[in-house]
Length: 448
Ligand SMILES: *Cc1c(COP(=O)(O)O)cnc(C)c1O
Image (tube, rainbow, N blue to C red; front, top):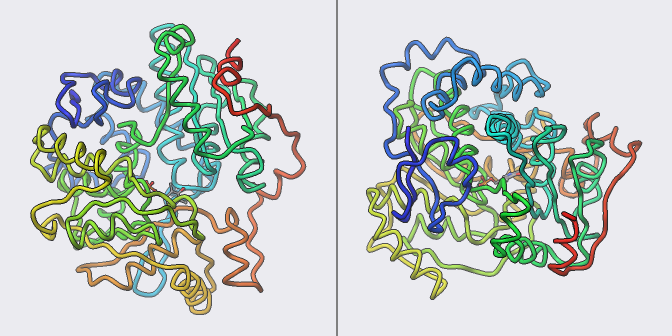
């Protein structure tokens, strides 16, 4: 399998090259040059458990890793999950919930990042290379990235986050990891400062080269690939095509569902549930992609205006026409908006935004009816699924354990104390972090 960039400037890249490249060198996102058709395999795949299906599917995309090695990496990645089914399902009346939060940091990003850590380490060890991963986080992604690479001998990870501006739990999930290849960096500034600092350091190509800097951001192709597995796996548990409802921020998760459907898995509509940051919901109704102001909500991992994986969807919507895509993205970059000639009603997506009140009501209703506590992101998805008319069984994606978001849960359900032993254990652990001023020099000095 070879990979190319959505913007047309990169072609014929192998899986391992795409893994280490992250963002395409032309500024585009890497995608497979052809989407494989898996329909002939589906009947056989119905009987497989999650790790076995992961091996089958990923071996198609990562065909430059030998099968025995790949199988071992997949087994290692999912051995860290605390449920034998890895991605268990739960019935809540007429919807089925898929719990993707059984990994080490209790959020769905672990499904991809546990595997990504294994893949990175393998690719680096093979070439005798060492990589310094530099990332910036406003909360969730940092801990999942750290959990993915902790203890890997050929990787050091440096995560910048705004000092005193991430939740205490989120900070502890990063700073209590004891492995010495993990470096937590609290920056005296905002999340935007962290991101600009990271960009400035990456822009110094000579520094980047001499210090072997790399990223594990949300546009890495391997993250999407790992996420395709659970959509395929769940769709095969049903006798008719299912619709998936996905709480959406960067469009990475729901894009994986789109790809699973394109590959031939029996999937009907995809519901994009956003919070008040509704740029994507507006797009699917009107065809207009227009940046708005960022709203801070109960579902902070979705407080995003510009969805970094959306470009991959547009590329396929434009029938892989890189030129048309470039024109659209240039328009958006220059004017803050771009639009299609007509609404994309034929793309198989439904979309709706869910406000704070609806999120709180959904948390309460589901608890009252089933005694089950949703996390606020999942509640956005469940609420969206109720607002959209889909065909076939409704499957909602549960992206985090509620104990990660105690304030939101308290607000909706004051009588509920949602806990998780992994989080309870954090308060007794030793913390390690450095605090720096928001300057490029201070970030560069971390690598001396
Ligand atoms: C990252 C995240 C999301 C959004 O997923 P995208 O792939 O960015 O659309 C939703 N919920 C939680 C808990 C997350 O951490």
